[in-house]
Length: 125
Image (tube, rainbow, N blue to C red):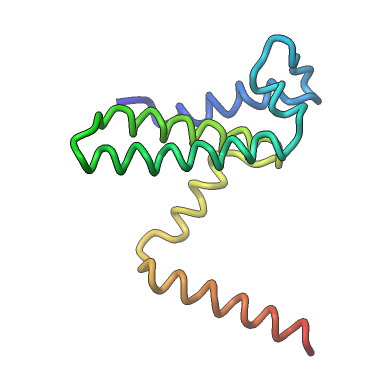
């Protein structure tokens, strides 16, 4: 079982590739993605999410479960690149998951909708 700080260690490596930390696009895939800007890594997130869906569908029909694990790892990796770009860490995501813990998904969605509705009404006032 991987250590719980695996995401934090990976995030630190990704952060070291940020342009402000001297990331070199000629030697680093992450630095190259970051140099190309949000459109590049956001496109990769979309591609990887699609590959997760396809691997999951294949797994439903007897496909290799390890392929699904690999695709999710690719998705998480590119999400970590996005977090780094926006100055966020895995701990921020984990804190949000902890905040939601014990709340029904249906209830969470209803609370978010209510919050959006209140914000929209506040803008109209």
